[in-house]
Length: 391
Image (tube, rainbow, N blue to C red):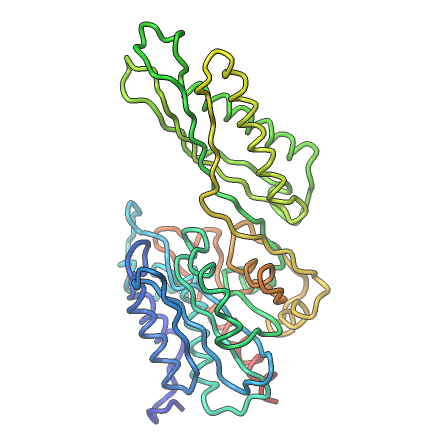
């Protein structure tokens, strides 16, 4: 029973509310944070809001139970990817249930998990816990784990470090122990402009850019041929991906500047600092090849954002605990990045990823959906967690 004396809210009721908040991109997430904060406060949770510098975005840390113990942390993000340009057959911000599936933006990534967290919060109210249950709700995960980066240092002083952390990204309720880290970079290539009729007398910045892209492709080939390998990933080596090259003003002007946006995703065995050093060396190599004739030749490489990977020991206690609660055996690794690496790397909290739904064919797609059976499996996992924490 809830505090209002009626029937306890269920996961679909809560998910219907969460989907209706259009927590996309640059928009504020404060309405959904208000909803979650009020929900938890009404059920006896101690709740702390962590607001960004604009005042328009916020995350939450929450705790219930004895404060003198570490407890377990459940973590998820409140933001979703855009729907613009996608051909939806349902309203993306209105939950629709049909054929054993729940449709709506974020149902899989990852408001379905958040709804299960809040259903657990509704059940835990009034239960005598032997250790605390802790929650983290973040923002701007979809644009590079921005929110948790600002929140992470507040976890310990606000609610204390947990003994383990479960991040609820969609894994079909399998226990994931790893994902690659990422660095997103921008290279700005500086050449010399002039009239295209005399093009050889000037340095075309797009030539610098294409030469640099060639060097990046050689680095990628080296990772594939002789770099570290981890066959638990679909792509078993670290990767470099060039996403965008831009430059030039008009056909009859030699471009003075060109910009390249690219990324690397690295295995735990490959140090991201070493990868960045190799990229910087490649930029210097290309620049140096032109500087005798054109001293202005330069390629500046800047890191725009990064997040750590996850590499949890499959034999660790957090893995065995998660396997028991989810009623699964074995482990997996995921291709996409998550916030899990911040908890594991920055705070040394044993961390796994386990949540309902799948990114394959469900998350980030038009008519995003999650199966009812996956929500039920997550609720059942949290039922077992509550028994463990209160028995």
